[in-house]
Amino acid sequence: MLMKLFAYRDHRASRAALFDNIDSLEEGGLRSSSSYSSGIDDRDNEKTMDSLHDRVSFLKRLTGDIHEEVESHNRMLDRTGNEMDASRGIMTGTIDRFKVVFEKKSNRRICKLAMYFVVAFFVLYYIIRVLLYFMYG
Image 1 (cartoon, helix red, strand yellow):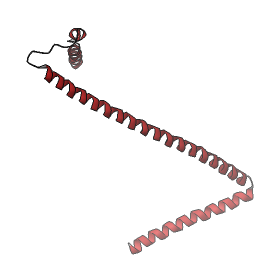
Image 2: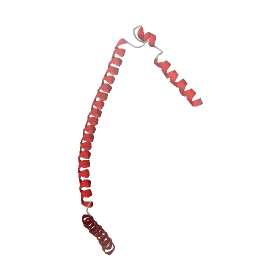
Image 3: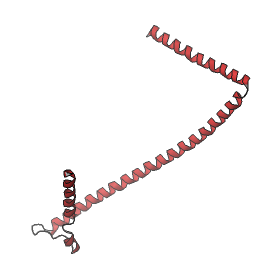
Image 4: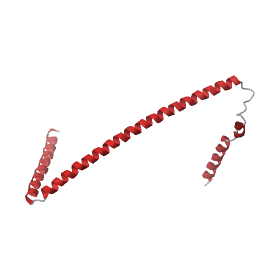
């Protein structure tokens, strides 16, 4: 609670600092002290303007780069979505064909037999790899 109160006071103090000279700005600008000459003020203004121009140019380039990156990601996402739709269509067709094959009992036996051969191949392959690993390190 106490920290919140201090943060609120800091916020009010910084806000007040922003608007301290608002009346003098409306009357034609801040009054410069007599110790500064108008030449120094002009140079300071030019330096500040150059600095602001550089910052604005940098921000403009940065936002342009961000825009290009977003556009490229959008194109990539569109392509990915189209490819996913195409693969969904292929998978649906494959599943429909499997359903047709499994409707008959004889086809089911042939598919099971083929599946057993594939599983046996992978098991034998794994066993041979493990044996070769232990034999030859």
